[in-house]
Image: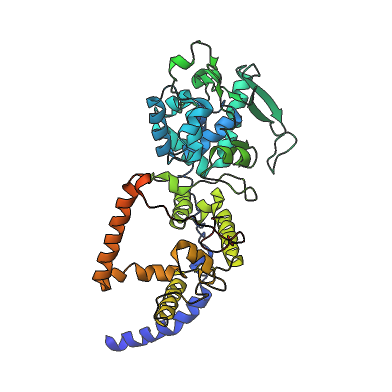
Length: 453
């Protein structure tokens, strides 16, 4: 049996290479699976979901809607701001924004305290605010399209038009792929740029027949105090905000432009470089640990949080600070002081050199020029005015511990100090009158002991 099986096995081995060449590869008939995208379809909000989320804010003025979209990416800050506004019922308008300047919230959230009626709405459902922010971060173009789609529906239903509170206008579509037949962009602006009204409306009614019964729009009515009337579209009390609103929607490009002058006016501790990029960018550090919904946002803003370079670029701090540091260092060098150490290693090396130089001078004083080409050691007048001799920083460090090595000298100094204090407490008539002191008219004011510049 084994004798007959051996030739058959050999024949199979010889025919295997030929069969492998003749047979077509299995991969040629199989479909290649597409590479996974950064954001899968399951992560995206659908058209129906976006309209459901944005229906309650789509009819806000563009500048106010821009602030709401930015602020919604920090849902924790919005919740804190809503609580603050509730605890300060009289704070509103531009003055309220200035009152929260020291709060750790993102500037976009701080601007919303100008509108307590708006925060009363946003504070009712933090999960809705978070969904709106997640949608804007992951699908900004789709969010802009949803807002325009809803505005066209309200206009077709006769519920969006210019009046004393707002100005409604139309502009040609600006998207790169826009065609002459593309719908025009609907712009909503305050009738008075200094006074902003927050419209209140029921989204189930103002847009006409709602197109998605399975996705009814979110609706959170504001406190009736701010909207005494019962109209379908109410404007209530206008808020004088001045320059507290500094964002504007960039239709067709899916982003928000920043008015640098207004921003810097209300955010003195978070200035933006006027020469930098003026497009808003999300600051992951202000997210306060609230998770991002989609994988793309988690990857993008997780990396931004690890290295804070993105935050500094947005705020314009690093460039301005670097220029200020360089200017200060150059000013010191021009006056004869050595430039500050650029790292810890350089600082340690300089400290070691300074100690070696002091050990070579038994008197404990600093050798001339120890601070550089013209340091404090080169200005004896400053040391004379301070109390005699060339009293540099190194000598001060030596004298600070001299009492530990000479107890009798320390006791003598202490007694002298006590006598001086007792003398200062006596009446002026009982004090010995010293002779008047005169200074040469040409005494220099330069150097380390002179007037602070």
